[in-house]
Image (cartoon, rainbow, N blue to C red; front, side):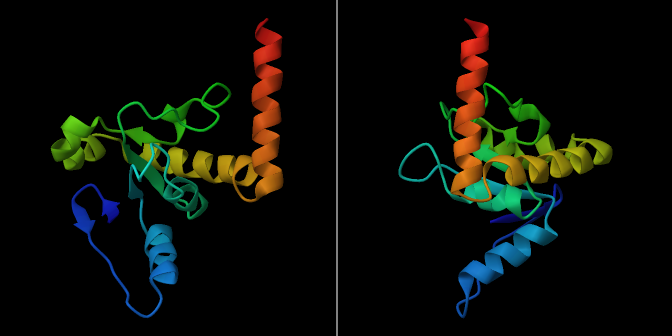
Length: 135
């Protein structure tokens, strides 16, 4: 599911190369839905921010990655599962300038913490350092 704007939600499939199709559509989109998978986390989350789209998370109880060191509201839209039918309105209420900043922030976060295993390890270390500073 690709949400290219709050007014337009598109289901996009490409039988020849679905991974390439997903990345292309996410790159062209302002928002991309990230529903929960078998667990609360979905690998689509990091793919979406890596493409520059704002993840729209539908997963009650999901603890977002590195949320102790990164304010999720700066790059993610979290919609309670029972409010999924309000997605279009919720996204439409986000000003264009805010959307632009959220996309930029998401890309910076991707580069710092998600682009590869070394970056993810850095996120873990930064989180631990943050926790120790609080004690």
